[in-house]
Length: 354
Length: 183
Image (cartoon, rainbow over all chains, first blue to last red; front, side):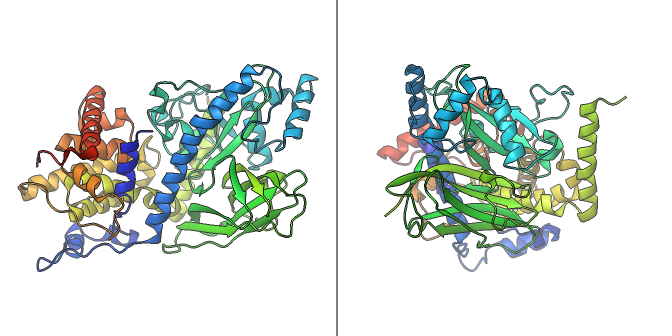
């Protein structure tokens, strides 16, 4: 990513429009009178808002995520490829369908034995994720073959009808940082990214049932015999302040910012896997805007591993945020069995107990 | 005769249309408004260097988008639609008011702790075309093709302006100072 481009985004981030929804029906002349500075004095500065801070945080988080992906995950995956059949956990354990190094080994062994043929097909893994974790049926899976910005208005790849354009709302990783593919030294990694939609992409995307983008990779072995797993899931309206593979120490905070539709239930959660019994979630969030049909959302929670067992010294886990039309009380989408979601973001992490 | 895919698409679109008709599409429009208005505002601010005009442009563009939401919502690039409408508005406003601005007008800082005031100043001092490209490509995150379409120039020209602008900013950020000012 170009440093200057990111600096420009950050530099202008505090500038926010004073136009609100109520002002949209106001005649332009009235708006001008209201918005124009008093000629007798300098224009009053726009008061600082917490939303701008959160937006800056979200952009920086995405930037760090992209840089971390290119700088660490890609080389690590290449090392795995060179290592042939060697079993290495790599720096980032998967989010789904397994979350531990042992689970990966077992899953690969089962695939080698001819079980779980879908594990060798990233499209099938993404589709299974959409059904089992998001609870979406019907489900439409679109491969990001290009930066999403290049897909705007184009026919959906592989769509028989060929008439529904891909919308431009998906924040999928390719295209989130345009130009990164052109950087010297960058080459495609054994990763695939899919946008998951609950109905046909064009109209569906534009309905702001924003797609959930899933990043898949081959954690053990690149090539046709290597299993695929979900590394991260992201949704435009739920921006996690945590990156894949990040270390979450006892007492540290996790956060999410974005937007929530009126009436939807929301949860920010974290959980350990394997022997680590830790699990928490919260439905508390702040909203700096009016509670209308869709409101800004910001939530954070403290990871308290004190009463959990099996989490020392460190354990794999994950952080997630979900939105649903139904109650999410007691739910953990990655464990399945919960209600259908309208938004979901999640990343694998390492939990470090005191 | 409809294909299966067409049927699904029509069903989906029908649900969408019903939603718009039922509640005026307020939820989807409000999400769109909340998600994009500040980006559009920043873009207009960089292009016009006039906060009030930028806010007017935002209000006008989103008002028109709301009036035509059923149409805009199924546009392949609603953000570009709003940007085009806002650009047309500020351009016509400038033609109408025939304002002549010498030098670079002050754009008040939104906060006392503006993270990079020097860079804001440098961007606002760039030539108009370079500011337009930065506004649309970087601040509004439009594609090169959309930016070219909105500005009525070739995609290659967009890239050239962007490269020049970034190179100039990089050069000036490392300490060669602020260079010539163009209105």
